Image 1 (spheres, rainbow, N blue to C red):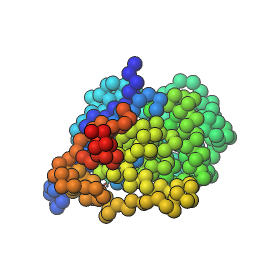
Image 2: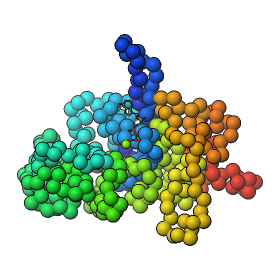
Image 3: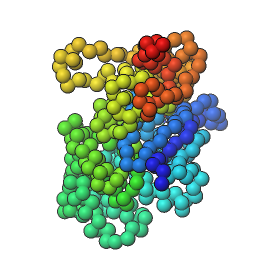
Length: 334
Ligand SMILES: Nc1ncnc2c1ncn2[C@@H]1O[C@H](COP(=O)(O)OP(=O)(O)O)[C@@H](O)[C@H]1O
Ligand SMILES: [Mg+2]
């Protein structure tokens, strides 16, 4: 059995922009524009990037809630884009999602018991559903008697626990967590992240963990991919990504995380990127980050870099002509 559970190859979705009464296509929003990712069994791959860079769209593509314009999605080595409805139904048991806003994703008119039992009913799971719901509530740190209550009776953190119980009900292999703690208070975020970690150990889960902030995914991720305008700019194991970021964009994101040590916090340099994220309907030429990059050269405006192997860690890849630290070390070596 291969250790890669999920793989995307050159995955793209371009949404048409239409105009006028005839709804002519006048352009495309390149929300996801050639994403290559590998998620290994049992690991957590963190995905980070600013709002609008295509993270949720990528999640929807992987779950096939949206059809891609191009590319492949391999789950356990098979291209699921060729699957028919019946085959997809089978795969959906193995792939679940936890959403950002637990208020919006839980039906306010249904009891918690009904909500958590939904996937069990939809997939005609064997066994006593009520008993399974009680068990799931306990697993996520709630009480069995909570099953008769409604979502509004719970706090944000508790509601996210309900969403998690629903996601693990069918014992999935992969859970896509789309900013699952972004809407929660900071004090609650750590509790929910701990719960994700405990569940991963207990049920051998694989996570694709999306966040817009590198500090959130730091502890939970084995590897991290940094996205910008629908593409991945850098991937590495967490340790090398945080210690030796190669891409100027990753470096800027990292410099925005406050340090726990007040003296280091006061003296360190914060990299402020110029301007806003450009529109994905009209991305810049060459390297799409060049308009905001502090070290961009002429080449970056003209050519698009491809993902290449970085020096140092074997698992570190970067899409940049002038990765940080590499030019100097190349010089030092010769
Ligand atoms: N159905 C759609 N039609 C057109 N544009 C879309 C659609 N869904 C998302 N987008 C655009 O795609 C880009 C990526 O969105 P999204 O995946 O939600 O970003 P993120 O989750 O990283 O904040 C945004 O510019 C968004 O406006
Ligand atoms: Mg999103």
